[in-house]
Length: 158
Length: 186
Ligand code: SF4
Image 1 (tube, rainbow over the protein chains, first blue to last red):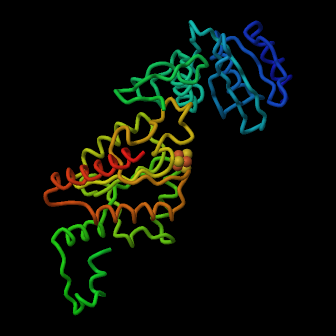
Image 2 (image 1 turned 180 degrees about the vertical axis):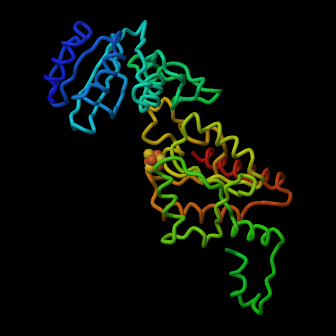
C-alpha cells in the first residue's frame, strides 16, 4: 500500500486522532498522529491484515525548538511497505505512550530518546538512562542544553 | 638498549656483561612489559592491528593481560567518556607499581574531535591519571604506536630505582637551574 491508502484507512478508523499526511521531500512522507491514541493506532498498524507493520526499524526523538517530537519508522516484512509516524508533545509535559509492548525493539530506542531528549514514555517497564551515567543531569541533545562545568569533580570543558 | 650492546663492546667482550643492578632490573622491566587489554573507540581498531601478526606487538615483550593486577602498563586507546573516566581511574589504581600509561590518539591526549561539543568526553586522559607517553594521530598508525612503545622502553631503561626520590629531586634542581640560566639570558 502507498502512504495515501494507509492514511485514508487510518483516518476512517481513528478520525480526529490522525492529524494529517505531510509530504516532506527528500525524506519520506509522514503521518502526524495524536499521542493520546498512539497505542491503538500502532496495534492496528501491526495487526490489521493488509498492513502488518511487524518491524519498527527506528524510533527517534526530536527537538522542535518549542516542542519535542518522536518519529516512528515502520516496515512490513510481508508487504514490503513503509510508513513514518510522528507525534509532538510539549516540553513541559513530554508524555508519550510507550510502544514497547507492541514492538520489543522500542525498549532501548525509547530509553535512548528518554536519555537524550527527556521524552517520558508512559508504560515502559524500565525507563532509565541508557548511554549517559545514571546520575547525569539534563538531556544533552535538547537545543537549550548547556555543557556542565564538571562531573564528579572532573572538569568538563576544554 | 644498553645491556646487550655491551657484549659487542671490545672492553667487555667474552660473554661477560658488567653493569649496575639498576641496568639489569630496568632491562628486564623494559623488555617484558605486559599491558592491560582494553580498547575504547576507533583507535582500538588500530591497536588491534598492532597486536596482530602484521605488526606483532609481542616482539616488544608485550603480552595482553585481562587483569590490572598483572599489567605493567595501560594503553588508553581512544575516546574517554565521562562514564569511562572513572572506570579507567579505578583500573589504574588497581595496577601494581611500577605502572605506566600510554595515551593513544588525539581523543585520549586532549579530547580530539570532541574538544568543543563533546559534553560527554573527557578532554585528555591526563585529567584523571598521569600519562608517560603521548602518541598523536587520529588514529595513530600502528608504526606510531610502536614508536610510542619504544619511547616507553627508553624511559623505563633510564628510570631511577635506587634513591629514587633523591635522584628525582636532583634532576629537578638541575633542570630548574638550566631554565633559570636560559631565563636570565633572555
Ligand atoms: S583519536 Fe580519532 S581514531 Fe582515535 S578514538 Fe579519537 S576519533 Fe577515534
